[in-house]
Length: 394
Image 1 (cartoon, rainbow, N blue to C red):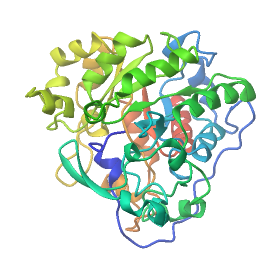
Image 2 (cartoon, rainbow, N blue to C red):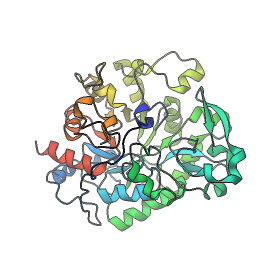
Image 3 (tube, one colour):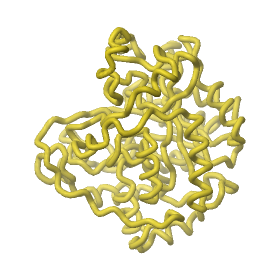
């Protein structure tokens, strides 16, 4: 997701030495989670099929593996994606899509790859380090659009937030950067292997920025989805973006389910900034704004704070009317992002002060599920599935 997604960018320094990871459920080849009473009942609300029923085939609340299983593996790698399926996630966010110099789409959190790859260790690319203005923000590092795909394939992924996830650094250097085309092939392979439809949830990253460079994302996404026959209303590929105009453009090119991502209420999507549109996210989540979104999208992906606002101390307050307002105009809601570690939880649910320690996340999941959200992005799918089972069982 976008750099506006502050809860996904935060790195909190602190002591290491986490307690043991929550026990991961043992999974069968079909992806069913063992020992999760109620998960079956949740699935009954929307039986997983082979994409023929579209969004309605997904269990609710849907568990979406954020950049795969990024709580346990470096994000946007096949190691992360495969583990997400092993843990039982309903949908894998396989692909924050950014282009290469030669026009290929690759999966990285941001076009700047200094924090997610070992590019800094490659002396042959030292001269590629530069400062660019990305969505109005000066950003220094190495950018995918300055590399060919062949060059990027010489790099390996590393953990993005090691202060919170020191255990993930064990896997630094193990996996390369996937292309979107490789993800589409992987999706088909895993669907056959696991005997159930694998869903993915790619995002167009900084589309206005890349269109200005002559590297428009939407047409490239559409071309690949058409090539693999995944451009239909019921195709198991949900597309998302923080820029409404990108979703509008995709709506003219494809029939896939589409989701508008929404950052903090006072922020403006960058395409609005670029075109002089004065509206903020607060305007988009009014009944009028939601009706407009419903004219070209099937859902919204709000930051969690838009669903349950926090007080000045960071603790949860009373839920907003966003879920009811969105449902009233036919939109689904998939807020982001639930994480297990202390710094990403409200203070009342933290355990100790270690930046890499888990807090008491289960009651937090319940509070969000009780609002009626249709699903949630999470870095810890196994935890989320247990929380869903608790919720479904009452």
